Length: 102
Image (cartoon, rainbow, N blue to C red; front, side, top):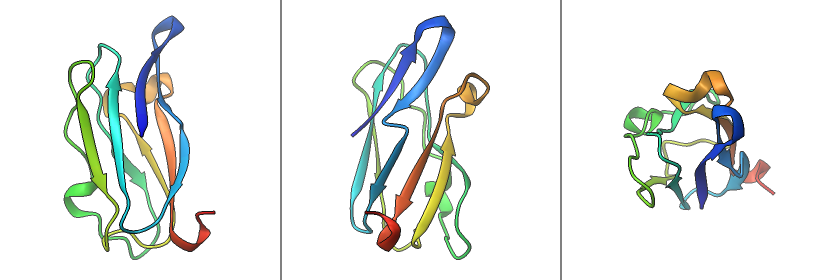
């Protein structure tokens, strides 16, 4: 589970900001602040074909969730993601998939 949280001074964050998974896992993003958030992959390994998973829907309201299924669209490697409206205030994270995920 990854929480989408508010921080002091108008900052927002993913907690944890870095995590590892295996193909077949589901990552649940949970809204834990009052601002709308999303998950948008900005950088990903060559060969990844994220399609609709490249940018998730907005999660609005405390306790709302967005589930990301890490399936065959994801190749092994490191993926950098942001929240579109809050990238400028530091809301970013790193997902590691596959054999390099230890």
